[in-house]
Image (cartoon, rainbow, N blue to C red; front, side):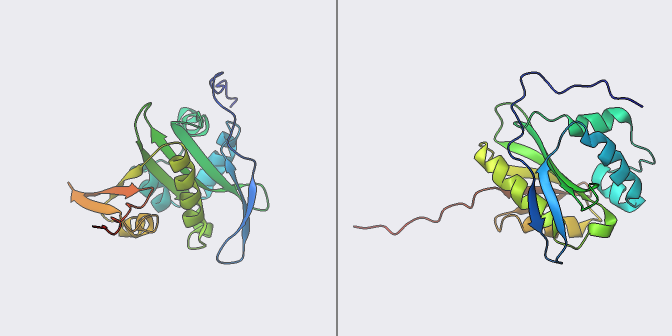
Length: 191
């Protein structure tokens, strides 16, 4: 099926070209901002991911993603909505980290998905750290996330971004608040 969507005409250019990143396990990926044409790669990554991975990312079983959902994820404005993708040596998308904010807000909701074969490689951490730095440069002060109560691994993962992360359990889900800049400690007082 062909996509008729085009990114907004006023959207700023993507922030940077791809960067080769070596992961903790020795594998390399190319990390770059998402492009609208990545909707096709995103569909293929979705097809290679387990139902559990999809469920933890979207909070629902999704046997086949709708075109509209893939286009929404891929058509970011690189300001209030951003996504970084990781591509393996074969050019296939193997991970994505994204944030979605609102105009004028200094917080954004963050989400991440890593293809099953790449989980545990350090890819998620690399994507999240890079996305956090990018968000902070754009004026964001924190990422927020809602995480399913059974997905405590995701909470531990988000805590790696900042030691100042707070987590609350509400209605069976974790509400995570991760500052992007460490609160500065008060300096010594001179009298």
